[in-house]
Length: 109
Image (cartoon, rainbow, N blue to C red; front, top):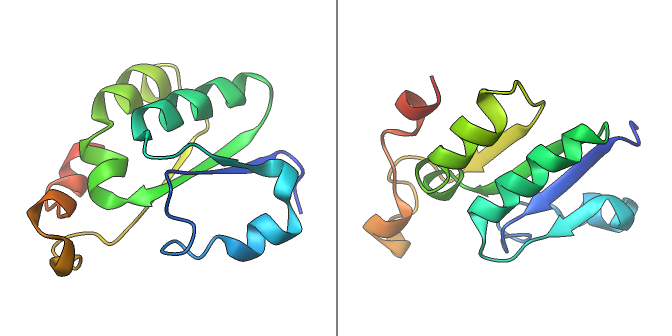
């Protein structure tokens, strides 16, 4: 495994199945809570020290809610941040429209 790979999660460890990574690499995991924008900023900063951050949350929050942070802190400066999203589209029906997104691919194109 690459010791520079780190994982950040916005309070969704169970939904994103991150348990095994945390068990094997607790020192390389950062739980940021329900603070997706902060998670992207932290990830961008970690790249400066040579880390390869993978961020994880639902698609609506990993693209729509943090678009400005991705654009300003990651894309413009070419940071090596991996934005990982789950539960895209309308697959999160039980949580309603606030957790659904259809424009995520268009935003990240």
